[in-house]
Amino acid sequence: MKLYNYFRSSASYRVRIALALKGLDYDYLPVHLVKGEQSAAAYASVSTSHLVPTLLDGDAAISQSMAIIEYLDETHPQPALLPADALGRARVRAIAQDIACEIHPLNNLRVLRYLTHDLKLSEDDKNRWYRHWVESGLEAVERQLAAQPGRFCHGDAPTLADCCLVPQIFNAQRFDCRTSHVPNVMRVFEACMALDAFSQTQPSACPDAA
Amino acid sequence: MKLYNYFRSSASYRVRIALALKGLDYDYLPVHLVKGEQSAAAYASVSTSHLVPTLLDGDAAISQSMAIIEYLDETHPQPALLPADALGRARVRAIAQDIACEIHPLNNLRVLRYLTHDLKLSEDDKNRWYRHWVESGLEAVERQLAAQPGRFCHGDAPTLADCCLVPQIFNAQRFDCRTSHVPNVMRVFEACMALDAFSQTQPSACPDAA
Image (cartoon, rainbow over the protein chains, first blue to last red):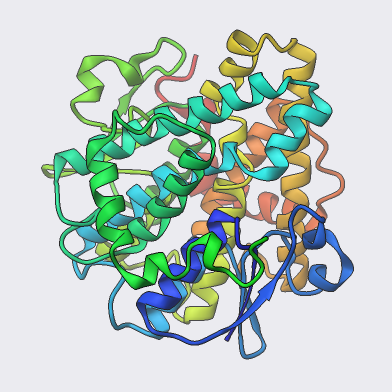
């Protein structure tokens, strides 16, 4: 398999974690977002969305990080990244989506650029926007985790939800967001970072890290 | 089952479509977003995220529209809302996420309020923001559909992807977004709207519609 991705893209990091948890080898193909390589012709022929990550499995190109992780879980079932029961699976997907649909889309690079370039917001306003959505969004995740605490987001093994949580905390820390109000989130973050699959795939460990 | 939802919430509409496609009965429990009922104590005891929709199945509360639809598909498999093959499932989830992670989060009510109330953007700038993300986001969906055209988003039966596409087009039309540049998207939208499951659950047909 081949993974088009970018060291600092949190959607890319989610997939790197999943591949590592499953012990799957892949070629790391960097796409430099700040240089705009995701919109260049070479990558547009691979990715209809012009977004990272894209997983190539043979001739098939798969986009969207959560869809990629579910695909990996279906094609390489062990270790499972979703629980066996329908309610558990729903809870894991909901936590992942609390992050991937409610927090991250508001704070990715192209949105921040639109705020400052097109809407002429100041750096201060942009940073206030960033922190608002991270800090309030993590509160919702905190309530989910507090309602049914486990070592990880769901029970005693990492799942799709943890693949989404850890990269979001990296983003939070990079932008100096408050995390003291989400103790369960941070406890799970620490449990994840004790595992090689999370620590060895982090942005600073990537081949394209500056 | 019971569905906490709001007529104009596109995430709610996604789940109404899925329930209708599967022929499942449910109690419709309105949560008035404009009045702030999603943050009131009565609903907070049901929903940790303070978002609609929430599906109650017996004692279990399930949040996040895509997680709810996958849960419905696992617990009531016919008619299937995801293809049988892993690559097809990945494609359907990716199209759904191209909408639910890339377009809709930027345009929901609380985000628009933050733009105007907190960042003091004008109505014109807010509308420009709205249209920018809808029109550019639909281009990515258009490229997905054009690459592998079918009667619906994926093949000849509606899936999770169609449950997400139709409500997004309702939002696009409500805010006068351009759709002439996405002919495959609009062709699929029309095919969906010819089905009762899509037309009879649309916002204007809901019990809480103004």
